[in-house]
Amino acid sequence: MEEDRLTIESFLSVAEMIAAQLRIKEADRWSAQICQLKYVSFLSEFPEVTDRQLLWSAEQWLQGTGGKDFLRYPTWRELMAPLYRSENGLANRTWGFRPDLPAMCKPTADQLRQLPGSPRPLAAAPDPHNAEAYMPFQPACLAALPPGHDEETGLTMAKWADYLNFLAQEEENREATD
Image (cartoon, rainbow, N blue to C red):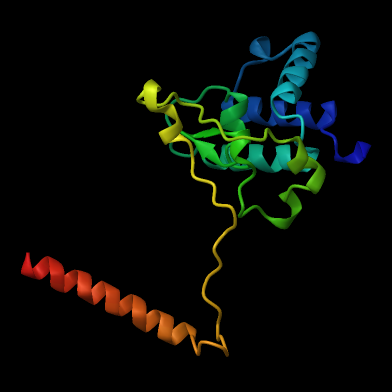
């Protein structure tokens, strides 16, 4: 699907939008050759991103720059942090797309297949001899919230809320006696 690919025109529009926001002077703007290299560089890091996703992510990044005294051109991972789950403020493709994206930016099944398979943190583990302990937990299945009303058990959201309040009260009582 060619329409789902990032075009160089959209990439250049985003680059120009960021340069204008950062007030980069004309003499410091990217040349045509540099633009082509930057486009290839971006695609090598984020091959699954579409025009719409890049434009949206760049706009989100720009809106997040308010009130900052010094700004520089973002790295690709900084720029894509609004679109992907992030680690230390940088997009981490191995963790996938953010789950709360607007409908226009939700990834397709094809995009999800292009993501790297296993999670690897960007930052090194604090203890290299025990690095596996620092890998993000990935459950076999996501636990669902309790049902609104379960006929079999009689569990309702009100009963669930009462139970959580009971647990909170027990915790407060335990802290008060300690």
